[in-house]
Image (cartoon, rainbow, N blue to C red; front, side, top):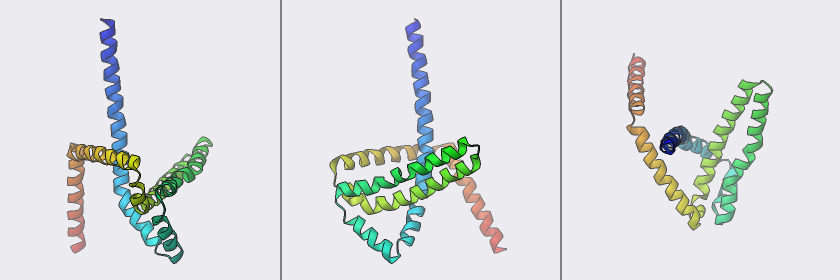
Length: 173
């Protein structure tokens, strides 16, 4: 009897943790979805500069393993920045620390999005990467379908539509 109650409680806790993790991942994915393309386009515009255009052309020509290293580089490069932000928070400079984390997230997303666009063909030539990428894409699409079917998402879209309509009407005068 006690074992059954313990098992039921454990299942309930694990289901709650899974739902919480799914919600956090959904928020992260929505941020990435919202920011990925616009930030990638911004970096692409900046990359029109002659030197950066040459760097991008070299990245596109990289073999798969080198492309993977270049793709992962921003993650490693931002680690000291995030540690600095945590240090600022620990020193009581919470707002500055959070600002550094947000800025690092935006810059990191922009750079990673652009690098992924440049390295994706090479990365997908690695069978293990192609399998993981396909599984990730399928899982992400299922999650996004669930989020977009939710009451909160549909309500948010309705409010957004209403705000845009009123803004357009106000601009017309």
